[in-house]
Amino acid sequence: MTRPSNAGATTAPDGAPVPDVDVVCLGESMVTFLPTTAGRLADVPAFERAIGGAESNVACGLAAAGHRAKWVGRVGADGFGDHLVAAIAAYGVDTGAVRRDPARPTGIYFRTAGDRATDAHEVAYYRAGSAASAMAVANMDLDAVRSGRVLHLSGITAALSGDCLALTRELTVRRTAGRPLVSFDVNHRPGLWRDAADVGPEVLLDFARGADLVFVGEDEARDAWGITGGPDAVRAALPEPALLIVKRGAAGAVAYDRHGTRHAEPAPRVEVVAAVGAGDAFAAGFLSATLRGLPVRTRLRHGHLWAAAALTVPGDLAAPPGRALADRLAGLDDTAWGTLHLGPGWTTATAAVDQEGTYAVNERSEGQEGTAQRSEARA
Image 1: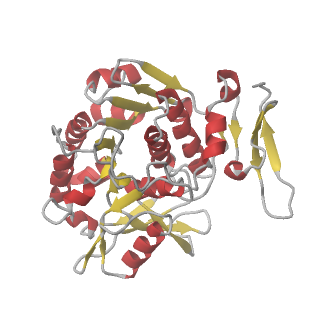
Image 2: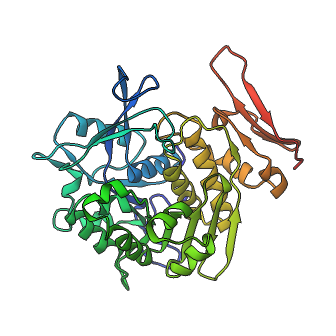
Image 3: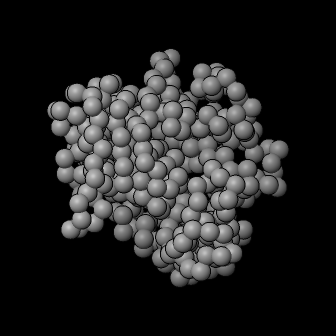
């Protein structure tokens, strides 16, 4: 695994200390049970165990790409907690600051195989009273939480309990010193705010205003805040973040920087296997490119590519595309990028791009012939 060039450094060229961690992600991770067959939860006979959680997903993706990532959370002193910590650490994530709670269980959830956007999709959460819901300012190591170049949070954590809400507020307060770059994914989940549905959207807007880098879906802004004028209207309502990313699903994403510049990038065409985990993967891809100091337009493309990796696998987590492949695809001219077509297996393609066009290979299995999609655009 390739580490960033500043790994192990203790000071920057200007003499300022360099954090030991690139990104710290704080939030709840749960054991996920994925159905082995399609159908209602009542009819599915068996499930496969996996892991899920917006913030830990981002940490796993970043660590898999060679960044120094730390996940901070709280899990039960139970078998599921053991599994979560071990599985997340296996990606290369630092889990040393994770706390174990002997009195509260690790959260779990079950879901159906269908697309989350359909009425047939079901999710059954068992997270009320979980160990993560007890995260609080008083019992978390805030020095560890603030130890990275970037601190990544989401609105899911704030919805778990009053203590979690206070913790998120503490971490998004603007400070003159001692604060990393704060990345905030709005992740509005109305079901989690059931007992405070009238304050949830307002709280999330306040937290977004306190962050430096914000990810929000255009649909989220409409549903939570009543913003219907498109990305520009979202920026008008959220002028504070130095970088605001408005995600538009298959239509792409728009970024607004501190200089008032608007950057819009379409998403490539993707053969979707499961519409889960794409938002977390987009955030991880954008953060990865941010850590590398790439231009905002290129960061958006990396976000799209990482999201495409998640969309073309059945689970919440997908291995990100290799850096060389992602850089080459992100560097395509506008015409080639606009005709890019990514299918299952594209991240392992051996000839994904050449100077004659763009390829995405679906390698079905060893010994079987793969399929390929080719754009007609010339580089």
